[in-house]
Image (cartoon, rainbow, N blue to C red):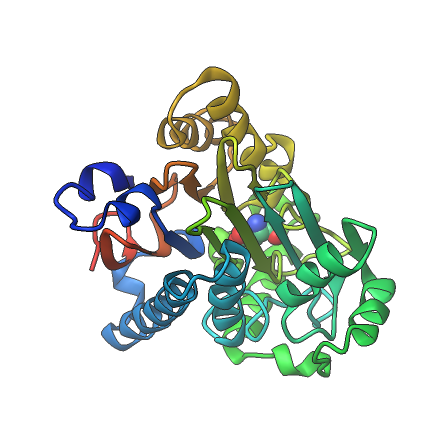
Length: 335
Ligand code: ASP
């Protein structure tokens, strides 16, 4: 499933050529997986649409007011981190030991600056820490206690780990444990629904700069300090003005092995194919054949916004200077 909106074609007829020449826009996701209508009430559906709409519109507002793509992605991602509906920030999934370890990363397409954080337990908005690592440290990735010390020094908001608790995610852990007890520890037998809800945003600003930001609680029942694809630059998140910006969601081990986000950008850069085509090839090709499920959101250097996923659904939304807000959950619906 994909939707692509070509800013250039939609811009025909706009009175301001400046807008047509400088597309601005944002795509966000709130996780991909087996989302079927039967398992959701109308109220739940509406609650997801409402947060997606709020996040994409507030992110877009940043761009419309002349803000950067980094600022826009941070705005959208922090709104979703603060919502208990998504597996990022408040509402993050539980580890096997029944607490929360969060991963996030951000990347700037203009200069390939990047910041990533893995396994933090007390940072309210891990995406803000990733941004501080990008701008205020000489490093790209910080993990665990050291990352938390840096967050404190940067005066980011810290919370008790229980802040991230939700009943819904706790029940998912109990279901996962019951299933695992019948089997040895095997990630591949896990139900993707136990993890769903990673959040991400990609944007293009009026200067033509791209950015990508992604944040997650990882996978339900993770242990041994498991780190997923989200903080691995090039796996779950990547941005390069010479090709595109990508944020992914899905089974992180596959996104790492298939280097999903940077593979999409590399196909655009070196094969000269469109970002839409590249994303389709990677998400529906080898990774899926190997058993990898998930999806990506993409914006290219021309401002084309798209999404593609090989799952039943992906929480998603987009908004650009030529496209009113669209929010969607299932493969066959857009609102
Ligand atoms: N990619 C995330 C991880 O593996 C999970 C997800 O997106 O659902 O940590």
